[in-house]
Length: 194
Length: 194
Image 1: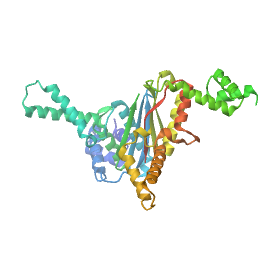
Image 2: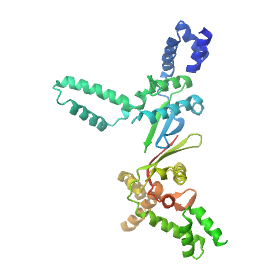
Image 3: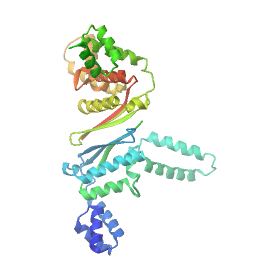
């Protein structure tokens, strides 16, 4: 692949400006995969300062699946009406709806999980291991590990993206943040299944 | 209007069988308005025995309004997959979504309103009337009346239908019950607004 072709592909895949793509390819000495990583890191850097920015604009997106037996409603926020109307933002909203329909998250992020909810899980783990004869410190470690795994699975942002499990949903959102240059937040979602 | 024309109109408006429409027109001595009332009553009778029937089938319907700034998700239950796939049921689901988008209900029915929610309202009414000098019994009556009015407005089923305020949303559902011959229940809904 010529360097022009690489540049074009990088631009197509990331949606980031030609100038930034060229810089990343130079830095990666023409290694396309490395260049993508560099851009992803940069994207995260670029929007880091915006985390606190009020994301009070946005769109409500819905998705109905499987003969109207599954439905998703998503409230996705960004900073400006301009970004809210962009194709990039709409695509992200659609992808997130597909993710919610397929991967059944229960919460947006770990902080949203009620304490009682985790207590119930802990009890199940304890029950499962009560005859293991392991010392308490080990049990606590194992339970903490299981709990973290569990939190990851039930929270939208930490879930593996169903279309590319090498990325989390948060990675997907970070890419859209880099492309729109705005803070983006999943405000809330609902998922109904008959 | 000839009796055949009346019969046709009644059939078109209610969707109920020719035989039932003919009976209702006979009973109403050709008065179309009265015949409709008779059918509505009958419809309610017909489905009365089904109130307890498990409405475990259904569809999830969504509606996005006003440049994706308002979104509604609705979980509407009926008894069979046959009814769930009917045009009648789908139309009802769509109408309910439009109603929810426009009339902003907070709950499905009065029993769903949390006690704290009503306590807050009561306090507001009391505050409004604290200088009225009216005796407590009168105040209680007025507050009860206001509270009932308030409940009516925040619950989907008791709201006036935005397209024809002479009917409640429950009337609309009852009509669909009569047409499908099945119990129909609003299981839940979500309404997001940016």
